[in-house]
Length: 70
Ligand SMILES: [Zn+2]
Image (tube, rainbow, N blue to C red; front, side):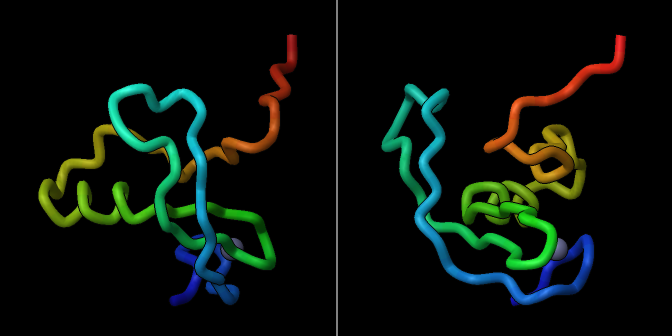
């Protein structure tokens, strides 16, 4: 498994999304050791189901607060 952003090594990791209320907030995913990009298996499954990328969750890092330049 390599990172789609930097092609670095990704490691399997348990990812917990505290905003997920519908189901188990923890899922298996992968995290890039180099850039910190996180991909969970739900996203991968959704991508396989639909070619249209509606939810670009991997574009941002969910673990860091987003800094908005005012
Ligand atoms: Zn990366």
